[in-house]
Image 1: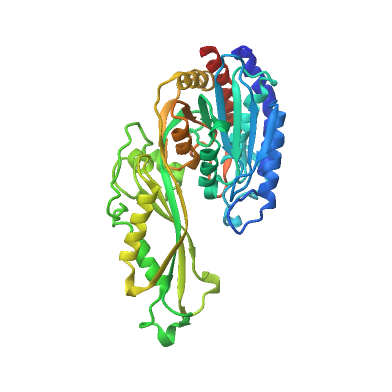
Image 2: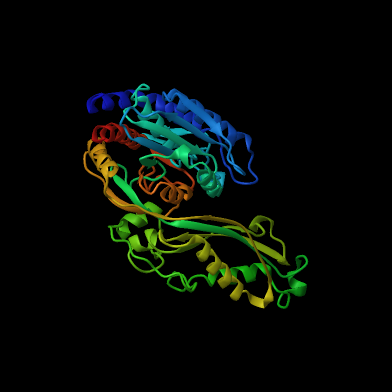
Length: 447
C-alpha cells in the first residue's frame, strides 16, 4: 500500500472506530479492589473482539496471575520484515464523584468533536488507535504484529511485568509502540521520551480504641486525624518542595510548558500560586512528587462531635526516570514514621511500585515515526516527558534492550485523564491512528 492509500483507508475506518470507542468506553472496567470484576472481564472480551476485527489471525485472552487477563494478538512478519509490539490497557480509573461530571462517566457523549467519558482517552483510545491503524491493511500487514492489552495497569500494572519476565518470547519485538501517552496540546505532535516511575501505599494512624466525645475528652485525647494531617503536611516545605531527605530535584533538558499554558491546562484558580521550585519541565518530568490521593475520614455531612480514633490516607509518589521506586517509598515511609506525633500507632500497607523510563531519540523506528507524524500532523514531533508512569515500559526495556520503545497517543494534556470529564479529541485520535499505520509502512520500507 502507498501512504496515500493508507491515509484514505484510515479516514474511511474512523466512523466505525468511533462507534467502537463508544461501546468500549461504556463498560465500567475499573480494576481496583472493591469494584465489580464482571465489567473488567466484559472489556477484555470486547477488546478481544476488536483485535479480531483488525485482521489479526491469532487473538486470545491470556491469564495473568493475580490480575485480569491480558488480550494478545499476533500476525507473523513477512520474510525479512521487523516485528512491532503494540501496547494499551483496557482498565480505567474509578470515576470519582459523579456530581463532578458534566456527562455520565460511563455514557460516552460526543460534544463538539470530543468524546467524553471515563477511559475514552486513558487508555481505550490507545486500543482504538491500534485497531484503526491495523484495519487499514485489511490483514496484509507490512511488518510482524504483536498486540498486548492489559487489564489492570491503573492499579497494579507490575503484575503484567512479572508475566513478561516469565514469557519474554511472547512479546519479543524490534520496535514497541506504547499508546498510553499524548501530545501537550491537540495537533502538537510529540514523542514521550521519559516517564516518571511511581510508588503508592496506604497509611493508617490509630490513637484510641474508638472515637470519644470531643467535648468531654478533646484537648487531652490524641486525635488520629490531627496526627495524620500533621504527618502529611510535613512532607512538603512552605514552598511546596519535598522535605524527605534523599529526594532531590531533577532536571529535564527539553522544553516544558509555559506557566500560563500550565495554569490553563490544570485549571489553577486566579491568585493561587504553583508549588515547588525549578522549571515546570523539571518539576513535572524529572523530579519527585508526593500527592495524597485519598483519605478515609468522617464526611462533613455526617460528622459528629468526636475525637477520631483512626484515620487513613492513600499516598502516591512520582519518581524520576532514573530513580528507584522501592528506595523512594522506603524513604517516604521512614520520614512519616519519624514525624509521627504522640507515639501514635502507624501501619503502612497496600504497596504498589512501578519504574520510570528514559528513551534514546535515534534509531530506525524513531525516524519512521518522525516521518509518519509529519505526514499525519503536518509537522515533525518533538521530545517531551510525562509525569505519569507506565509500569510495563521499564520491564520491556530490560527484556528487549535492542528494541526501540516509542510512546505516543491521543491523550492530550487537556483530556482530563484520571479526573472528571475525561475526553478524547476525535480528530487527534484520527491523526494518531494514521501516524501508527504510516509508521508500520515506513518501518517495513526501511527494513
